Length: 224
Length: 224
DNA sequence: TCTGTCGCTGAGAGCGCGCTGAGAAGACTG
DNA sequence: CAGTCTTCTCAGCGCGCTCTCAGCGACAGA
Image (cartoon, rainbow over all chains, first blue to last red; front, top):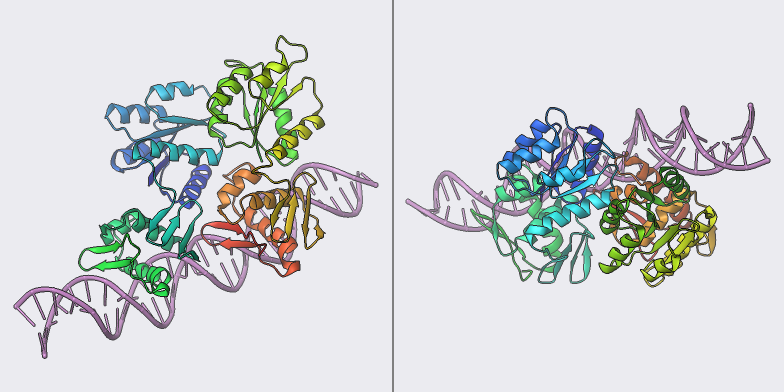
């Protein structure tokens, strides 16, 4: 889930980035309207968080231009408390939801998820593959009822593989979605696949995380 | 404990916010009925304080609509002394309690706590984790029968962790619910976790408050 | 069997996260 | 106003996580 946050105030931007990353989002920042518009056009985001008061180009105008270009990425607008702007205008211009500053962080996340759910169809709360389970909300992994401790990176990798279970996933795709880059050495994926195997497969005598030589990896839906 | 206060009179709203924050609640304000309805729908509050006379949409209607949507958040209604409205109507519409202005601040807090306690099905009066106990009403913490002195902030933090025991709770969530902000330095959470550990864990040779590196903290349900 | 490529793994370096002590600022009390 | 308590900031430090690298084994094609 890729999120673009367009917010000029550094402190707020950094806080949002930290928080949303902790929730498992891949977060990019833009610090003014022009930059935000450019990023939204080319970035392939699942949702955009857009402040209204921005240098160079207001959030209103970013939203208006995107919609004029038939770009329908979900947009959540942020506004100052009782500014000159009326939030209703934002909705008229094609935003999907809005929040008034100061807003609650929990509410922000809930609304983001609601926006994502609106088109993406509902996601199951717990991801399963045989007797292997991962709960993204509780950040819990179990096999045969035994809890397994994973580092953040290992957890993100397993979550991604589970969401695409039974598919062959290339290292490039994994780098793109789990590392949020694509020009790094793919060896890091091999290393982390190794770490995962030692935690979710080896101790249980299983083989859920399979190598497809020359193509990538597949996580067996029956748990190996 | 998150409270939503829907009150158009600025002075009163600000006073309630200050006062309830001092009691350890996280307080959000809404200044008219529309805003209040919007916030109550999406905000994940533990209780709502709702004035009746509001611009744009009356408290009656806010309450009625929430209940029509099967939203059962506890609602405490406020009314002017001898207005045209009859408080009994409020209760008929699904409010849980009411107060007539001018009301005593102490009474308001007492009623709020009563409402929170009433949800006793999901919210037991005393929160437990192994031999560690916290009584929100009496503001008391014990371990092995020994009383433990906590500052208000420490108490609020422990209460929140206990309400979500066994879950991994991120620093962002903690900041949101205990500090009522999320764009502050997360280090303050680390500091207070440290304070708590020195009071509830270290003296008893326990380890209930666990770090989940890169994700947050977890309070072990068995008391560590 | 030989050879080149691909993937796995152990070792280790770097760094960022989380913990802590010190102390400043503010609230409260006598 | 002094003394105490509480809250929060800051800087330093240690360790766990992340990632790189080199060596080696597995595999496929000739």
